[in-house]
Length: 533
Image 1 (cartoon, rainbow, N blue to C red):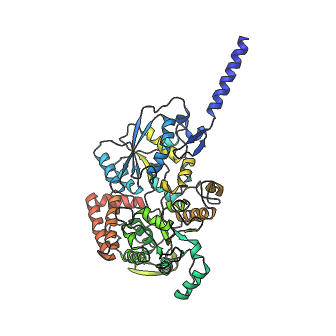
Image 2 (image 1 turned 120 degrees about the vertical axis):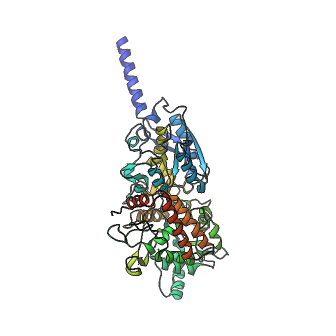
Image 3 (image 1 turned 60 degrees about the vertical axis):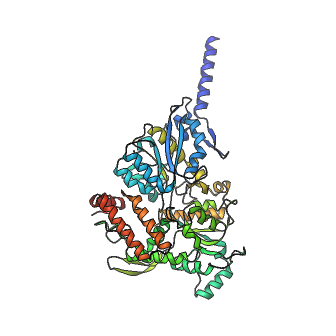
């Protein structure tokens, strides 16, 4: 009897621990929504009854935004769940966008070590790598103790922003790129199309193929009540406020005016920021000036107030149905689905940004005509993601947090909600044949199915475009952007013309390059854009 009882007990223990080892866990976030994970997805640290990180607190910086703010919001949303899984505590350190970079760099350069990790803009990466301020995560990524995420899900254009050389430094979070959003219902209306053709002499494409065509459409719809709300409406809306990421509009719009496509990166082809032979700024070249002049003209087909608007104000104008076009990040597509904020659910069109029928060729010092639109995909923006400070005493804890947010299920949940600031861009976000998500997944998360198809195809086309605009990832990257932002604002507000604004930018860029060191900058720039001397 004793032997039989012992055998029974051992069998019971075996089955109990087997069940525990392979049991699923259902996690409930702050919003009260639940997601079920397998133990393999969560990793052994999270499923172990012994909380390995008990008593450890990590400090993570993020752009100021609060519990429902972009990039900051998901940290609040999943903090309680993550703390229960690990035993650790997460201190979310919010910093205003305009001050975030400087505060992080001060902490690192002084060796203070106040912060364990940072949710950075990808343009900070050059500075962080050059100073050896952050640590690679490749070894952690292979370790089954940590939550499981798929680095192969990132398109090459986004992967470049999370890696340096052959090493990973960031775990998947945000996938930034700007696409065109438009009112598909209004643009496909036969009466509107007929009236436009009568006035402009041609039938427009839906979506527009060139920026000139988009301008004509925007001009046509600007200033009259095309949505029936009793008020005059606009052709386009942009967020142009200085210090609030307004300069990214110009970067996306200007690419086809300035970048001459070619088979490889050389002095004249596939370059945007600097001459790859000597770091001379290209920003005040004729293509760039023409692009800014065009943007200033285009802005006149939108609300006057947009010059002082940040992201949320411009997005809300489009969401209320007041503009035909906007071009911005992935937040817009998911915010359209929020009927508490949006009046245009089910009316959305999306596409890669338009091109131009001529581009400035620096080798000829002239604009050259093209047979087809010069279209460029982009990764414009921060693609905000977490990295680990080399001063942190708890790098494993930081990585666990980052990997948890990078899991397919958390990432998908975040990407379906515009307030999170986490935008779609990886294979499990896209629909077949481009990816593995299903339209039912999106419907279950509140999407109109037609909107979802437009939105995801637009982003797939952008991130997998044959030509992707070069991204600025060198030391001083944030400083170059800030200088451009400041001088673009001078043009947007009418203080100077386009040429003067960009001449001022070029002078500032030269000063930054000289201060950091031209030879070192040139080497970093060549490496970043794939230029071989």
